[in-house]
Length: 226
Image 1 (cartoon, rainbow, N blue to C red):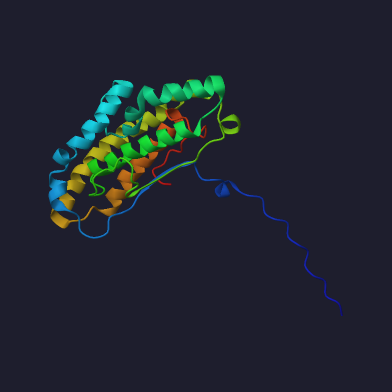
Image 2 (image 1 turned 90 degrees about the horizontal axis):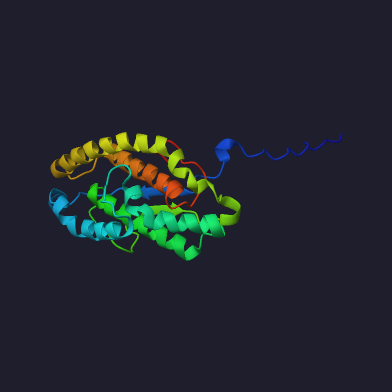
């Protein structure tokens, strides 16, 4: 008696849930062990030198003041980053790798300063080391993945994001104040509050990469999570 082998099942086409992840992501390592209460208590004072450094760059590049609200990266990366990138895409349809690397490194530094100011970690912000920041920005193929003209209207398309980030930024200030007291009394940053703060930074970073650094044409998702 012969047995027939089952017919091969054709591969299942990829679903929407299996789609490629968004090309920009940000995470911060949660600190294990007790926090340094002294540096947290004096964090505003200790952050002044690195804030001045960032402010000098911002004043030179975009003539705006540093703002660590929900849109802190948008403020810090101003016209100095946006205009050259826009011209490169509009007239040359190119995104040179050296310019991309510079933009991403500046974005990373801004976020490391944010990590320190928001009390997420105790390490003083480095101008070059990764530290606890995990930032992923995929280098785009400009000719295939980036539009020439879309950057002209991206600032308009992300207005809904800026509205949401404004309210998230207010929540971020409240969360940071609560975390300040929590660290002083318990030596820990509550994990739920930590995840919220990282989520706001992640959201803001994605909006900045879409509308200012112009590294992707994929519209940023409305979510705090990855």
